[in-house]
Length: 320
Ligand code: GLV
Image 1: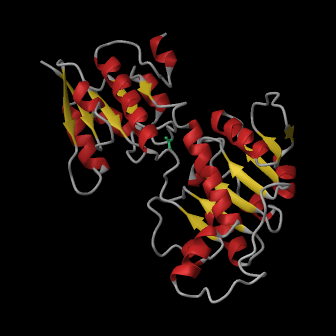
Image 2 (image 1 turned 180 degrees about the horizontal axis):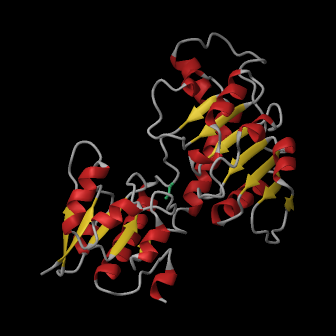
């Protein structure tokens, strides 16, 4: 009997058609994303799961579906998977690090520039026929060069953002749980970073220690006029407090790819603000990177189904 791999979304590339014959693919084809209940039901007869960051894989689901021998997520972040419970049940968990590092760092700059140089606002201005003359005071923004960028989290993406920032002529301050010597980076306590940075960019993963890291008090302490950029996870920032400071005009603006609840409601007050640029969680969304993420996720899933070690395993202790 071939092993049954359940896949929750189709994705770019051909990697699903290249799985070995002893693996059969079952792909969700609904017009809407699969629900938690539907996933729990279908996984009762699956050997492996290839999921997205939108699929919650928690202890209750694992308990219901006992037969899984691998959980492979097409994402680097694993806040949607209870990795500790997977380890307890002997299930290796795969993810897709590295390939999306540069792509996500590039989106960070896309949002930073779009917000600080008012690119989206300018686009609307021209399209709406409001451009009547060249005006020396029109749509003035903030330069990146000569500004201070505060990076929260110095993992792979934070380090790549650092390199790009230095190339832009920015000064870089950082706060991270683990500190490493990086040329051009000044390490500071989080409160100092928030109080002194002209741009704050978030690059920690979401877990119990980073959830609400930028709580109300910290959001209130971000320097007046600064821009907040988030390409990590919405749950790290108190969105309501952020919205208040953006609405009052105390903050310069924000570039947000991630939100506390996704998809962001069309009624979100953030969407009424000219100084906010939003994107629908597209940090890794270049054609090439998504193909490579798909290949890695398939390689992890197939390895797990065939009883081999996952090439990118987030809970190596499962093999101890
Ligand atoms: C994207 O947010 C990812 O975790 O891959």
